[in-house]
Image 1 (cartoon, rainbow, N blue to C red):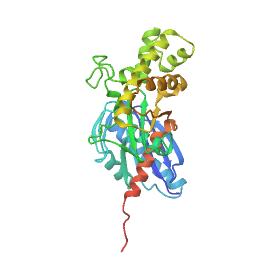
Image 2 (cartoon, helix red, strand yellow):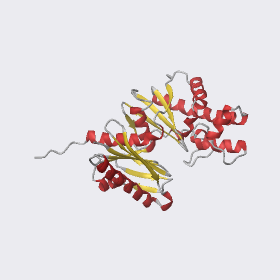
Image 3 (cartoon, rainbow, N blue to C red):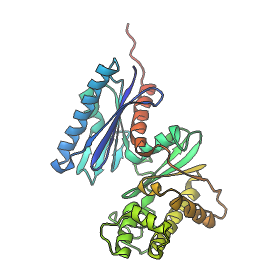
Image 4 (cartoon, rainbow, N blue to C red):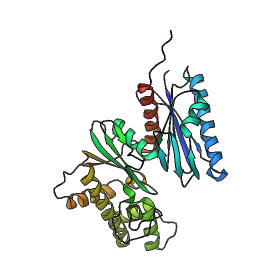
Length: 312
């Protein structure tokens, strides 16, 4: 059966799939990234994993994969196929697309993890049918992807969608990026976890615990959560003012709080818009499969734009 290899690499783990022509997940697998062994070992682990997937497809699906797609975190030069920098994985300027294509002997595509997830949500998930959407992932940090007519914009230098570094609290908390008051310092899952651990006096408490405490009416939790929602609404209104999306898709770990997040967030965004058109604000639909599905779409798009060889 015709299929492509899809790999979604994170800071600690890798998710992989063999994806069919219509986006169906024909086979899925996971394993550790192994970042403790160093950046070179991570690259080797990715290539070995991909080779195993190719062999599995050939044996179980009757033919080898036609192409491969790889989504990675950090700064990604997608046109050049280079993973420029990833703090969690320790690499710099790794030509992952070429390494993957050489190892597998098939065309390969490289994408940024959040933009790749956005691509999947736009075509297959919560943004399906929308000509313009903005996807925001609320995880350890915050990043986004702007979708336009079935593709996701990467920007002139690969930085498009970095909503987490919009300054929402001038002169606020310092951010590792060098600015102060960035959105992800207030509204990411990591930021909420930190604030709730401090407020509740439990160093092991996290954002999910805070959301549960909100539902029980804990005043400290309500305060922490409210401050995060207010900051997030400020950042989102800035984004929708610039981009005018038809649908605003919220995903990532913090979105798993469901109505505890979405009810006050919708109210906060609505209270802040003036002349702007309020988009539909919806939860992401694909969960942690978005990265693999998006990587599969990158591979399928690559095949669609590749001119087949003509035998004389």
